Image 1 (spheres, rainbow, N blue to C red):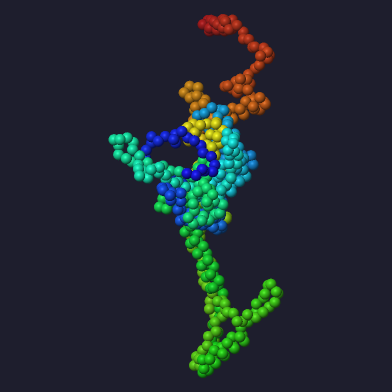
Image 2: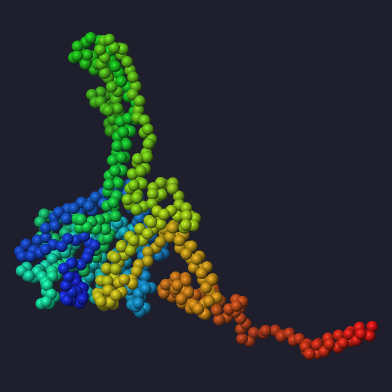
Length: 553
């Protein structure tokens, strides 16, 4: 096999040959498995697949220029990618990652570096839009071959029309394409594949392209390319689809309805007249000549030329909206002029509205967003329409799929810089998440209600803190605070205590909330009561004298 362009990350687990399976590894990249054997093994006949895939991508891009489709795409992209003056559209979330704080800090720094390299904060909208329309995204990871430990130096976008992912089956021995587990077991096929990318400068692939470096295309190693798909695959034709695939028929129907409506209105809107000219008993030729003379006599067709500023007569042309001139023989009603009414029901737009709603349903956008004057209910989240809830979940799935690109960037960067090993990355990969900014109205209302419920639960459980529940448990389970949020909040509280914004908890009575007296502070004179025994004796003597007088009386 010819040497590939780019670099490759060696994984010790991939070198193991103990795993035997007749079924190749599942994939969602829409790649066919091409068999390579003998002399013709260096050729990859994929002309038809290329053409189909390229036609799909071009069709998606043409669809995006349609006004209704463009508006729907903008709704999706604006919900998925939220830009802010102070925050980045996406940040890495490591609260579920079981690693040291030093490793987490390096991961955050490298992720920030990768975003700056691809200029994601400025181009996030365009990047997500291209991925959503095309259904795939390619990036070339450029490194310094002499110093690979410096990591990724540049990230360059590749047009999907110029690159293709190829999985080529290889067989070392065509006579025995099977692998035996041991002498007792039956032989089972264990196919092996060479995976690489074919890149060409021209969007159109030549016929019978040779999959060799320097002969029509450049073979690039798998690890040098970041390939992120939409996750939608046509299993019948094994092709990656875009989210616009479901709307192709709806767009075509809407266009035909709109075009037919315009043609109908142009042809039926004007009122036209029918002139019945009495030609008497004239022969056919003379009757036609007489009809043309009358037509030219009364017909007025002066045309203004906007380029030259002249007015000219165009009587030799007849359009579909002009009047009709018909001969009538002797014995009829003579010369007559009648009027044809214009088209009726020209203001009917029910069919157009139907296909617009159908298009929005196909694109996953709520129908309530079609009208320009349609507002949004800012009440409780329970009053939000179901389609807005489904749209919010749909955008969440898009974000999760789009985040595969960041995962691949981080994997390459961390391994090249020896921060983690390939084996460590496989354990860490599922615990690294990405936090996107939210600007969805439903999300805001939902978050507000969730916060109110958490604070209400906190007030209920507060008397039991320290007895049945710990503070850490309450913060993580009741308030749903992550480790990073807890750390940030604690630092903010300490900073505000030092600045005097918040009182020091050690100097405040936990019951009353009043500040405790400091050492050396004058507490004032302590009030003293009289001797309780003396007071009691006085009360007893007075009562004895009173009782004695009463007895004497």
